[in-house]
Length: 262
Ligand SMILES: *Cc1c(COP(=O)(O)O)cnc(C)c1O
Image 1 (tube, rainbow, N blue to C red):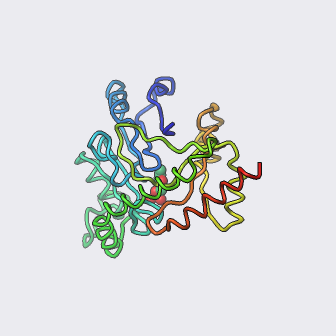
Image 2: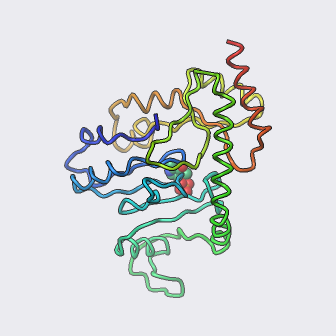
Image 3: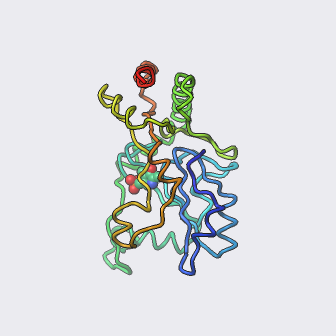
């Protein structure tokens, strides 16, 4: 229902070479970090949290990305807050912190020094981007409120269509909707009809085990029926704080037409 990894299935995927778990907090909700942290502790694994979509999202009062050894939040253009590109790495581990600083700065601890204790690349954000980011953080509460309002409006307008099942928020998580994510039985039709009306949608993510890069480097993977079904049925409608209520009304009308034509 929440499209996130279920710790009950982790045991079967564990091998002697497993070093870390990467939970993904998807669509503006938190993964169940209570069960993931205890699984990681029991099995001596590190946790790297993909909190790209979870700026401002909390699991039982603790911010996404702060449970694991490393957490990453994205400030790419379509995220909750943005600097155009870039993001932050969160860690409480001094060693990881020092190493990350070297890797992002061509292997140097700071600018102005030209002695490189490590190899690295240029993963720095610019001061101008950081300025945009700081201004955006101040607006986070407004952005949260406006995204929730828009999610609610989609849910209400589409509530008569039983085939449309919106994402369900886990009870221990807060929610800053990333998109209006839902599953349904005629994704391709809705996608096409909206496209013809000039409205962009996003499919759910292409399953990891089917990614050509994964197969190229690690060979064919076992089928994962839940991921495949979600990809087949999952679609996202646009949510951002500038999309108007009229726009949402129009988008919902187009979707209703798809069902009326059936
Ligand atoms: C956007 C996104 C990323 C990538 O973030 P970048 O800042 O583009 O590197 C990773 N994971 C998820 C779930 C995302 O939504």
